[in-house]
Image (cartoon, rainbow, N blue to C red; front, side, top):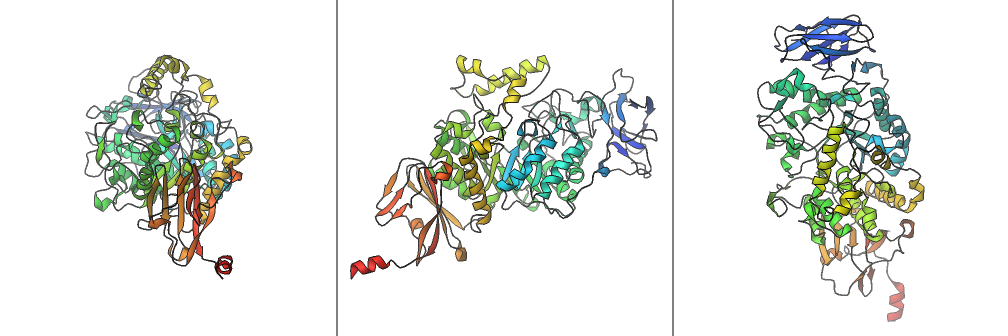
Amino acid sequence: MVDQQFSRRLPMGAELQAGGGVHFRVWAPKVKSVTVMMEAEKTTFELQVEDDSPGVFSGFSDVANATTRYRYRLGNAEKPIPDPMSRYQPEGPHGPSQVMDPSTFHWSDDDWRGNRPEAQIIYEMHIGTFTPEGTWHAAVEQLPALAELGVTLLEVMPVAEFAGEFGWGYDGVNLFAPTRLYGTPDEMRTFVDSAHALGIGVILDVVYNHFGPDGNYLSFFADSYFTDRYKNDWGKALNFDGPEAEHVREFFIANASYWISEFHLDGLRLDATQAIIDKSATHIIAEIGQAVRKSAFGRNTVIVAENEPQETHLVRPLDSQGFAIDMLWNDDFHHSAMTVLSGHNEAYFTDYRGTPQEFISAAKWGYLYQGQRYKWQKKRRGTPSTGLTPEAFISFLQNHDQVANSAKGLRCHALSSPGRFRAMTALMMLMPGTPMLFQGQEFAASTPFLYFADHNEELHRAVRDGRIEFLAQFPSLNTPKIIAQLADPGDPATFERCKLKFEERELHAEAYALHRDLIHLRLNDAVLRSPRRGTFDGAVLGPEAFVLRFFGGSQADRLLVINLGCDLSLDIVPEPLLAPPLHMSWQMAWSSEDPDYGGLGAVMPETKDGWKLPGQSAVLLIAQPTVPDTTEDEENE
């Protein structure tokens, strides 16, 4: 038990005390002694084992303060190492930890109430490449533009400290320390506070399924952080249900709470949840979700899960054996969309054709695979989505993984025709579900997004070779000529190439206008903003054409007509969804072929002779009261 004279926010780590000095606490059952070594103060002192907490060492220093940099010497080890719950690593994961005082930051978001899952526009971003500077400070300057665009929720890729000078962040090793590469912890707080002032929420991508290969010192403190009982694709699996797992669970639950309470984040995105294996009575993911909500002190939160096998119990209530997460990434929609955009369906795109029925089913059910056989994996995939609301499924044309899983890291607009890109963008933005953009997508960024990671030479070779091996599943990429052209993940130039160029907002004004107008349409249209199950339907109109109808009740119906192929004439239309409500007619509200977006001109698809659907286009129609055609009456007389 912690000595009650000391006040603590986190169960472990170094924490300032109100009357001065710092209280240190660490779980290190692997050693018999722990010594704190303070650098500038040139002071050391030994922590004491707590009587009622075996393996836990703690102690107080009246010399330490908010600028103190320190390490722990474990037993008689020659090399001191960082604190596993360090709040800041100013010299990287191999350097000293620094005591931090989170209470000195002056928040201005007292009136901010957080985000709910409904009616969100998510924007995924990587701080290191979002701006040329790659810092929190520079990112703050771009927040007003994102607010004007209509973004409501930022999903920030992992920022926990990792080795090297650049990386995606999924090799984090100090989970409580925002990386020094993007700025100080208070600069991260400024980013969040500034976003809230503009009406934008912020959730953080966290990695609770593995640690990075360089700079991870946890096993020096305890072997029980890891287990050999489960397989993990990225290193040792974490121990959430074995001996001494209570300390490991405490570590991750505290981390989830920490980001919400000390950084005012509005939720988390949990990476690769299928690799978080826990056979306890209460799964660690469910406990993390409860901790997030409790730490928000009444603010709304959003918890997103990535889950490759598409297990929908993650978003079901706790009393239904679920984990009570809010939203899931929907890879099925992406794979169908990219198949029709690019014309290719090799490797993990094998089980998709990009047909109209796939998009209708994605709109109605979220996942396409909910237990059917999946050819690519030679087994069944997914679980039923029955009873789930549409916003639980996040739809996207791009994300960090999918853009980078290619030869050149090109964005989808560069892999398709302009018309299809506009039409698919309209579908993603207006269909049921929660739309997500990846940084730069809104202005058709010319910059690629490639895989980059700065490691020592041995790891560099392993990562480079591993990347080539991963991409070999695509036959078109597994050729000597393509392999020779693949960007080297460890080359600083690869990282630099991925930085956005914001002048492209103006240079690519048509793409920017397309996304801006669609976002505003989605958020401001009462029928489209948050459709519920049973309030929409869809029908196939042709080999590449389909319609989604939104039943608006007193708000009037909406009709989204998509044609991804050539012009299609329908002089016979035995499809009830095309019929307007009684005493109403369809009026065009929006078209992807508007010249403002680079289109060739918008035309009304319904004519007196039937329907003519413009090729590679999307049209939104709204039911309006019919205006009598006096010209036709006069002709009849």
